[in-house]
Image (cartoon, rainbow, N blue to C red; front, side, top):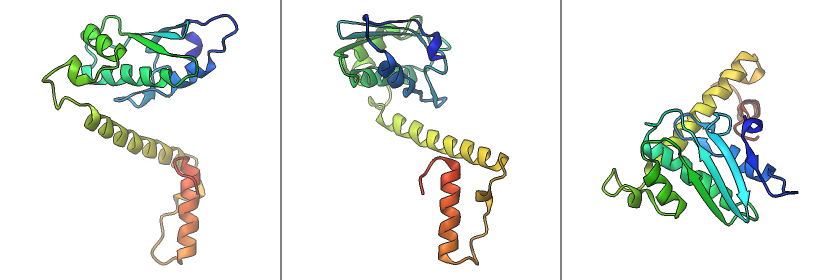
Length: 180
């Protein structure tokens, strides 16, 4: 989907670093890249100021998830050399004004939505990351099982420690999640 995003960069500027950073920002609920999901509608870089327009699948997308994505975009792009300022636009999202004002100023969720929830999204972020890891493991083992690779062996009890370690290393390398 990254090829479908209208981008405007200064003459001679290679926007690959910015697009690579955006590709790493995930929808916390779906655990997919916002670029792959088609949420990024446009991207512009002028004089060190990156502007990103988003369109989430629904204008009623959960406020906390929309905030997390906007905050993650800002953080990711500020790490790109030459980007000093980031502006996020959420289009027709029901809380666009509040989210944009807080995120674009680098303010926390609790300031955008005082009295909402615990005031911080740290616990939600940890929960989403934990769920994402579980989903990645399931996907990986499903790919492994469908490929009928040797790492599917589950007999461990009677094997020596060296044999068990070898099987675990095979399973890890096949899954692509862990390195041996």
